[in-house]
Image (cartoon, rainbow, N blue to C red; front, top):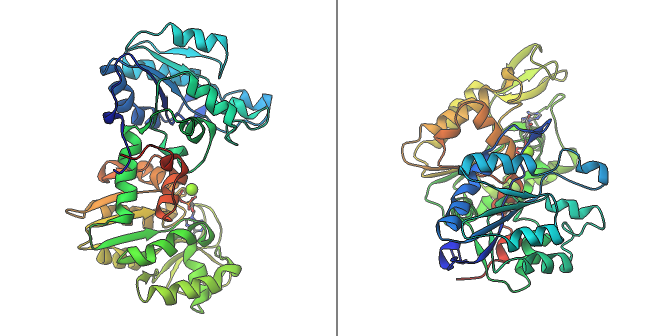
Amino acid sequence: MAKMTIEDLDLKDKKVLVRVDFNVPLKDGVITDDTRIKAALPTIKYVLDHDGKAILFSHLGRVKTEEDKAGKSLAPVAKRLSELLGKEVTFVPETRGEKLEAAIAGMKDGDVVLFENTRFEDIDGKKESKNDPELGKYWASLGDVFVNDAFGTAHRAHASNVGIASTGIPTVAGFLMEKEINFVGGLVENPKRPMVAILGGAKVSDKIGVIENLIDKADKILIGGGMTYTFYKALGHSVGKSICELDKVDLAKSLLEKADGKIILPIDTVCADDFSNDAHTEIHEKNVPDDLEGLDIGPKTVELFTKELQGAKSVVWNGPMGVFELSNFAKGTIGVCKAIAELPDAITIIGGGDSAAAAEQLGFADKFTHISTGGGASLELLEGKTLPGLAAINDK
Ligand code: ADP
Ligand code: MG
């Protein structure tokens, strides 16, 4: 990586500010998925093993009003982190002030402090999310060096990442940031070929940037999900009641022209008379009948996509092939997961929150080389955009 990483710093006796991504799902104060906490452990452990003092902070959800604070405290995360590390984590329920400063002043090498949700600073003027320079400066003043390991927020310029970095404090990437950039960024910039992109999800409008960027970079683009029907419309097929963005039909046409055969669309569709698991379903080739809606790719398409994936040396998957949340429309996504899982020696990557959830839910998570922890950030990498959080890290 062209950026400095935590391994380039001497951490001994240093107060190490670590921006982590602890934006975990919580239900009634209980963490329902601790993947992101686990993903931050290598960086935190590295700081402790090298005799640094780890000062951790993260955002959690969105906070606009005083009422929004309920259920958005990082206190449950501190508890879980302490269990995972097997050591005490001092939680400071503040984002600034004397208590926080005293806790940091009392730290010994190898100690861990986690302070409160950085977005609690958003209540009074969006200081965190609007990258208020005074806030970034204050947080920077609490440490000697800054490690940004929050890949999930790297597509945003906030006080807790870009703000701190722009004060001039030594700023490096943590291990998670490095891994995500190497896998997701590396796959886009310098893929092993042939490279196949599989794109799905609900809407073309969400994925235009990705399709445009990958048209030049991928060897093939397989398209499924709700996007299919905007492309079908562009080809003159009937789409019935399927999700279809009429204002994007011309764009779909021009993408198909530009792709020059690289874009491969489904050849059959699972059509339903209702958006539910109890719906009556029929499989149709290309044209969707007027009274039905397409909710998954059909079995012939799974076969076609499996064939198109053969020989791939790298694969990026973003967007489910159907409404996988309903079991009757999960077969396409399962089929594609299986086809990717069975590739003998390909680098396989998932970028996209719902796709990651689908792989997890359908039991394929351990079959991929890398599942990105940041939906929005990985999408922007796939779009070829520069992530401000990454750009603010010191160059090697
Ligand atoms: P990701 O988070 O992986 O980038 P998206 O957010 O773009 O994925 O899309 C995920 C959503 O797309 C899922 O909730 C899924 O139900 C929906 N979806 C997939 N296929 C269809 C379809 N044919 N019609 C309507 N929604 C669909
Ligand atoms: Mg999504």
